[in-house]
Length: 499
Image (cartoon, rainbow, N blue to C red; front, side, top):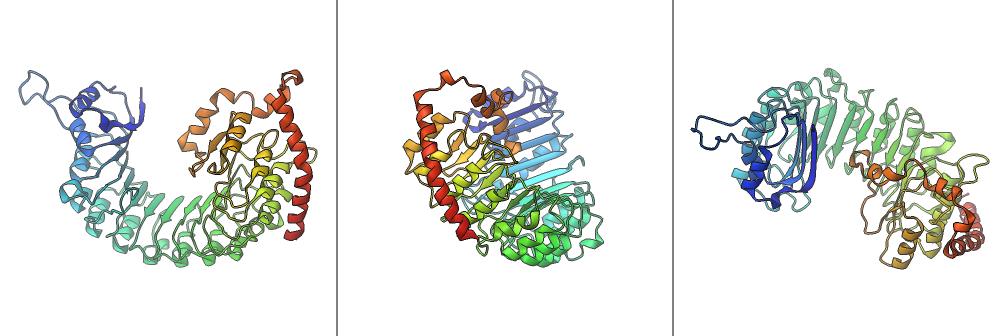
């Protein structure tokens, strides 16, 4: 066994027993991920130990002698734990640590400048992620300053990807040092860079970096000027500026010239319909995923701004959630133009209603295609203002035959949701506001559908014998036939309104 992923809370085990178990771990293990573990348990497992009935000088070999990648979620990231990990795991190339402090940690349990100096003691580290989560409390790495980043940069010059979240005391000096010292860097992820400004990127042309992924989330001092400099990296394929509120249309004008861009995340930024229209140019053949969730300046015309004149036909994932001005007319545009989306998210849109569901259910993807809504695999309608009983009838078979994930609110529609679950047993229903889990890295979609990949749900309906149909199935078909008249009226009304 070379990989081991434990998603449970390891802290429920008694600490002495836990350390003893790991002494039996396979020496071939190269990748270890643990869902949650205390930093004291990590220290005990990795600390040198004396063999039973032996002299103190007889130290047992380290556990995990061949670990290359370590991913841990802990209570606190501390200097002691960093030192133990960096010293004990001599082959480590990937280190991902995330902590979730309930209260602000004391200095003995926190990461400081000295702790960053202890990273990469064996010089093999290429991928580093240090994240202080704010899930329970708005805490930061308050004891790490630019000096600590300078220490880390000196011993991490071969770094290829860096993710830092919660470093509120680090300024332009520290971040800029990383960019200039790590000449092999191609992935940069900064979250809550509260003191990062455009100056970090103003001389990007002076570096030899060839960045492919840049994520600058909740960096509210950044403006369009930073994006103009980042866009000099023509190999960029992922850009994430979520909740960086000063990023706007000028940034999109520069981004539109990136020929390889596949993922663009703009949630909560200052972009407008005009800015989105710039994406019809350079990115139209490459863009695969676009998220504009919560961009308050967007109107219903944002959809046509993205897809007008046949542009961005390669787009497969679109997030339009939390847009107060998005109406059924925008969804009608998607249906009329047969946009082949596989992932559409419109949660928390108060003006989206039954007509949007009917339009998506009735769209066909090609001339002569008699199956409806055939491209969507995930659809998020959670807490949309106009969803009623009528929409649930159009979410049943034979509509949306490829749908695997659906987000709806169950608070007022428990019976309808239960009926839909019985009607579509292969559908993952998310009814409490959870995000749809369709990310490849989660692997949940593949696991859930493993037994059904050979025969699609639609194929099962096609091959089902008429005599096996139940009375309930026939009743559903009758309801759908009755709803066709209602849909025709609503569809026509929205089409007239939109035009």
